[in-house]
Length: 155
Image (cartoon, rainbow, N blue to C red):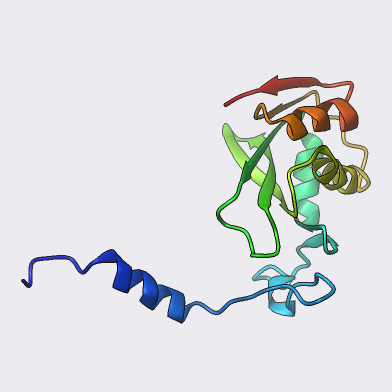
């Protein structure tokens, strides 16, 4: 019938065929075209087999200016070699804006701590609070890496 929408399965197969799979090499490095912004600026802060951190200098500057940080994570958008995407956000003009993206191989406190350690090495950040979910690794992250700030949990 001409008025019916096509079934989802054939559409999904067509989309998957048209996407090109970009993956990391044996050393955990991304292809060159994924290492820069569309304006040809560097977008990789750190890269190894355990962790890839994406951000720009301007994003780190914005993060530094903000006292209230938010952390979020998702699992369904990662490259096959990684377990989750962890994102640091800050409040900008009444909107929470993502500024730092990390592809992590796991969800242990060590995984989160490594990401925060690499970010904190870049400047003298002084957040007053961070809001995370109640997952054990993110709670430990706040206590270990940001012990002097207020940690708020959310679902």
